[in-house]
Length: 158
Image (cartoon, rainbow, N blue to C red):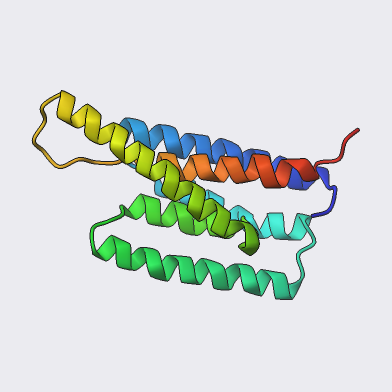
């Protein structure tokens, strides 16, 4: 990635969008379509600002398409919500393919901890209805982790 201030402005916007997604998923168990669309539609600006070549963009799109295909199966099995599918697919447009696997592993670990915490909360409150896991929180936290650990160290030190 080039040391370009516009790239970091866009990454900051992505971080804010991920925090917003996590908060709305916690509060309403919903991630708004406009937010997912904004994340997806600004990715090409980030590619341009980062001077991604056509090959890298093609690879980015291939990883995104594969992600969407797998997540659609999980959605059909009712293992994942629609907002979560859209958020992770939109995020795949931003994260380098070699770092995206790290994001998925971190997301899975955080999602497991989140599921255990929500299940424990559900049991202590003696609720019998279906547990709704705000998985957007795990997706957003993993995305923020990757932004901090993988992208931030590339920032120019002034």
